[in-house]
Length: 156
Image 1 (cartoon, rainbow, N blue to C red):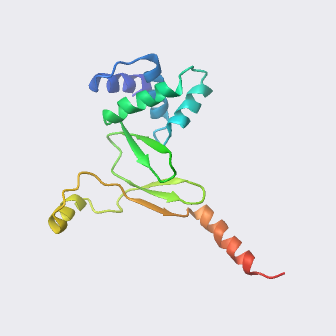
Image 2 (cartoon, one colour):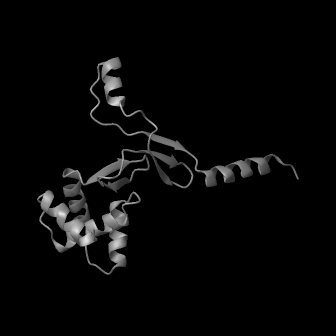
Image 3 (cartoon, helix red, strand yellow):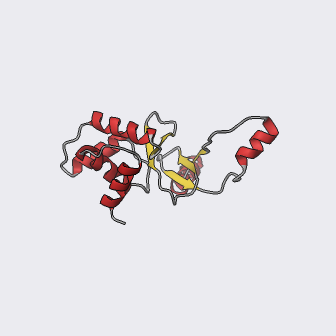
């Protein structure tokens, strides 16, 4: 399925009027669906293609897509909202975030599938949704940290 067909399907199924600007934003989101992007990232990627779309238009389009459930907004603790394009075939996943470089790693299967039912049964709490975020260091940054730690203990 090509990107134009996906964009048209999204707009028709969600009753979104498809302007040129919205089409460009959705196109960027689809072509970057393997990562989490901010509004500023989208703006930069659109500008790289010489399209003249303002940041305010991007924010309005993001809000529409988020309200329709096409985008998921994440707050990974750095003060910048990141968005993830929702694809039906993509399974529920959680996030590992490197405190050094900011890399976001998706990881499925950390939490049990029946967590909602377990929380309801054990705590009497209806869990509507949940997201697990684990902060630490990716392999690359952890190796640098370990090497720096070893070198700082060596006296010359």
